[in-house]
Length: 365
Image 1 (cartoon, rainbow, N blue to C red):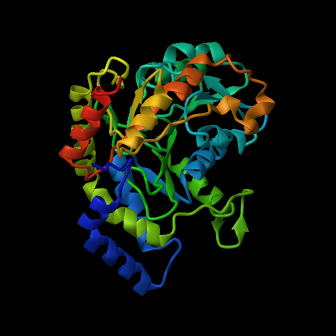
Image 2: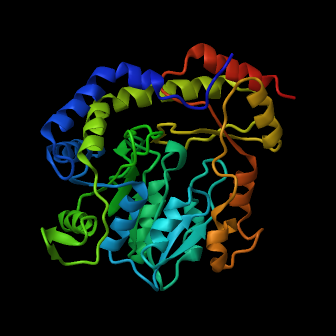
């Protein structure tokens, strides 16, 4: 049996009529930037996240960077980020001129460990950027308490967590702002690059919008040294077509994840842990195994697609050599990078395919 790591085909076939109608609507209107589709999607996504404002951006990295810039994070500042995440989290900080400060995760959840944050706070620290990695919500209550105690901003990285909740509250509605990615592989994915910043702060939303539009508040009037990062009409229309189906598709991912959690019983494979009162959306189903590379080779030979998130930790990447962090200084991030393996997880995977993955893993020796 063949089980791809990910496939968009089941979802695209199900939504084919709506996606084609979205394309035709934009094409016939012949208006491609800052139009009715963008406006409608921004309102719908803000409502979905239970926040007041949404500003479309060109991608998820820009959504985070523009939020930080709007909060006036700049050179000389520091921002707390997890040591285990996709590099876009740290790059968003770097592009403001500030310095990312890495805090180790809880190895069970892969997310930033709140108990380790305060040790890394200095007089230069301006914000905490919790990442809801793999669609698993962070433990936000202690993080919010730390931020309040030290008067720090919170910018949530929700790039992989569309629709996840913590204590019944939507991820993305906790901090001063949050950034989402709509990269095609995300739970809510565009048909190209796209992103959004969400917030409850009207002034912040207006500033993010201006910063993403060349720093302009109205045409040819530039109040900031801005960027060009806007959600185009075509992607907004595709996203608006998909959004009403997101909760249903996330529920299916939860069902698939439960099959994995109930079915995998190989002692060499460590299953993900979900913190109390969190409801993940399982963008990635990540396991750990000391013999990760052997397990991956074995699964691939059996026709099962896999991925590694992420095989080289950020502090060991050449682009962050200037931070001077040596191998061994962030051992939990390094352990995750060496042992994490992502199993097939997508809307439309069949129960037979899931059971084949389970049986194959259980037979790994």
